[in-house]
Image (cartoon, rainbow, N blue to C red; front, side):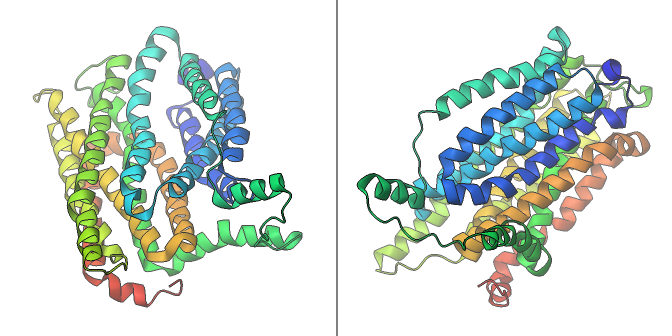
Length: 419
């Protein structure tokens, strides 16, 4: 970006920032539309324009065009990503949803690992525009797979069935006219923001997952500084562009291992307790706190990973050590996120739980978008060791959150205005 468009380092990271902002605000549009027109309609309508804006980014002849196209590619693409959670809830019962959700969440968490690993060599061998062509090719394949898919949302299925049989469709719970728009804005925008500022559970879990997510995006700026730095004071390993991208595969391995660990914990703890309770004839659901064991494990993996990375990324230590240090971060990040989302949904129920998850998503992407903008300055000013340690100290300060909720969660939940 700097070479092609003649911009500074901070400006060259803006396309990443606006893309992540788009990821955060896209669900505001797609969530209410999926409740009215179905999940499939969102996939079909939103994904194709997202690919077209990716095409526009690859063809951009000036920096402004690139920034605008990247924003709308993220905005429209995230609509499909957000509705995927709704499709999971349509297809899987509450008892089995943890496994399906963890595998679904693993895919976008692998993006920050696979993207640089592939894009590094693509940019080095073919030029930066080919990073967009790779996204476009794979996106077109995904879109082709989506076309023959069927609707999964129960309400829309019943409406289509009633129309086909000439029956009166179920009543629409949304008010008509302008009142419908007000209701949608209240549910998709104001309720998540209200929960973020008034519900301590939503606020603290959102801050925790948002910070972890932000560190992940800060790595987009930090890893090239450590392994392929243009600054003499930070030159350590002297990787080329492609080799620097492969560093992110450590995060990907951590995400995959975290998914496996989450499924194992769900099988050994949550599902076992549910089956034991059902065997006695008790069909009441387990308390939401039973979802927090994965987050409690992940809370320790995050600071361990960051301290390990920060103080082994130096010239007298082999490059494999800081790369291995990223594996527990990928594990911890996924474990905390999956556990937090399931805890929010179990705590607030399907309707308010979606708003709680939306609040979590908005804060996560907004904070994540700005982190790369100051990561370079922070690493240059503090050095790799202390800059990463600063991030580690924050994860240590946030570490008690899942433990506090596990201990005092029932008492905190009783004071909620959404229960």
